[in-house]
Length: 180
Image (tube, rainbow, N blue to C red; front, side, top):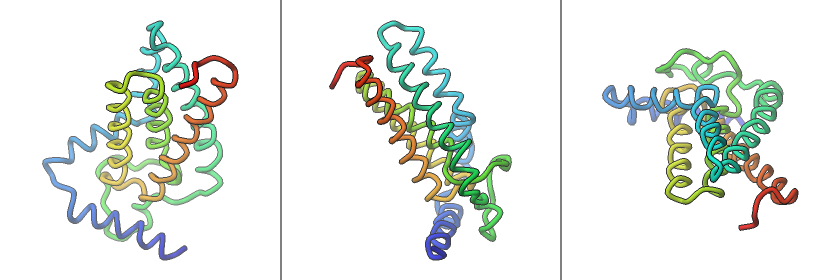
C-alpha cells in the first residue's frame, strides 16, 4: 500500500511541476469552486426541478447527491480518515484555502458525478455531455490545486457514479421514471 501512497504523491508533484502554469491557476480555482459544497449542482438541480419537463432529472440528481453526501461525509471520510496530501507530501503547494475535512474520497468529485450522471441519463445529450465534461474538470481541478490525491478523486468518481446508478434503479423500480 505504501507504493500507492508514494505514486499518489508523485503524481501531485508532477502536476505541480509540469502542468501548473500561472496563467491557468485562476481557471482551475474557479472550476474547483463550482464544486464547493456541491452548490453549483444543487442550484442547477433546483432550476431543473422548477421546469416540468426536466423536474425528474433535477429530483434524481438531488437524491443522488444526498445519498452520496451521507455515504461520503458521514461515513467514508471519517472511517478512512486519510490526511490531505499537502500535510503528507513534502514540497506540495496548494492553490486554495486548506480544507479541514479528511481527503478520501473527494466530495467535489462525488457530488459532480452523482449529478452529472443523472443529467446524462435523463436529459438530452446536449445537456448531459457538458455536465459530464464539467464533472471531469471539477475532479481534475482537485488534483491541480493540490487538495486531493488521485485515488481520492477516483474514489469520488466511483461513488458518485454508483450513487447515481442506485437512485436511478430505485426510481425505475418504483415506476417513477421510464426505462431507457
